Length: 439
Length: 165
Image (cartoon, helix red, strand yellow):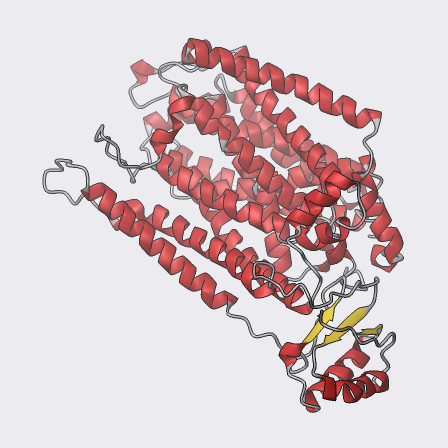
């Protein structure tokens, strides 16, 4: 429960507290940025080597042609669902407790999509030819394959990125209009341009609230479709343990699950780093923890249903993949995944006495690790155990893939740190809109 | 211009002004946070939902037509199989429909809120203090005494006349 009701704080204090983090960066802030940037540079070097020498520098080889890059792609696109669930669903249901967490969630969505969207391009090898994906008329008479799920991905992610950026931008406008009067000259200019001359008239508020409600409905439908399309990258092939009708909802559930975990982690970090204890209260962590627990149970149910069906069918090619996960070379990853995604959240969040901000963050880290492993276990074992058993193989990633993967995590950190210095991480106008915090 | 700190007083003033013949289009309320009025006080009809649906249909339709044209533009021998299939392009149709909806909603928001339109820079815009709702009434000179009387009677503070430059 909340220890205090932040909405009852004086407006001047709310404004000061939420705008203060925008002013100066501490030494710790810049050291973190520098450390993250060095990891990003390492990733760029690795990508440069891959572009120069070709895909042979990675562990991708016959029969496992999809490795870390596709795992990372699915993982980041999955996390992007944080914004959709927390912001859109809670906005539509008018849950008051969502107010301090929506912007953090919406920012996660945009940054994760930016990062996730890079992976198909990195995975192409010849990244400079990525525009071949776009079905434009050309003299080479290349037939644009609109039936390819990869093209579906392109269209779906473009739609999602566009929608998410607008969904993040719209509620930022009133806050930027306020900031346009109060900050250093270059910021004043930036905020003035971005706030589009917002005056706070009832016509503007009315249009904003209507647009946000509509956008919440639209973005929700888009988000579900995006992760379903990502799942169809797998399910539309007749590979063992991929060709499943529940892959769409299974992926959506996993995506929301990892999205909530990412949001909890980000909120916990921001709460401490920016001194937002009065605004991101135990109440918010408690509610999000319950959601995380619910999604953990749902994820376990879907996983069990998927594996149980395969086991009962006892089809040889499917069982080869199944066995490699349960007791074969991938077993350590599989059982770690079950431990991280189910056992840890179930104990830490299911037992009320153990449910604290710290344990919620611990559970979130475990869930993120578990969900990355889940994506890995979907990609690698199936490709390593194709229907033609003589073509079986093992995937061993090289430092190139590790470096690029690490760089994307560092990239996420840098993007978020920069965002939190440029824009208030909690929507000030939304925060003070209702006088009483809903339980 | 007049400042209000309590919403019921502001609502009473708006109703009285409307009864005195001031059009709702000539009234604007400025605040640092959204003010929700009861129906009938200061309604702002919106066509945003309709625009979102129309934008969705138009963009989705255009995209599907584009896919159809692109697929028939390439000489591909298919052995009698249809080149274009709604099943195969269903995802693209769906996503572009949604994209159209997103873009038209955003575009209409900019239009309806007045952010995109050219504004009359001569009309004064009040500086609103936190917790204050400022009512701007646009009226002709003969109506000014009556408007001032209504605003004072409704409990407004800082009632001031500002000329349109």
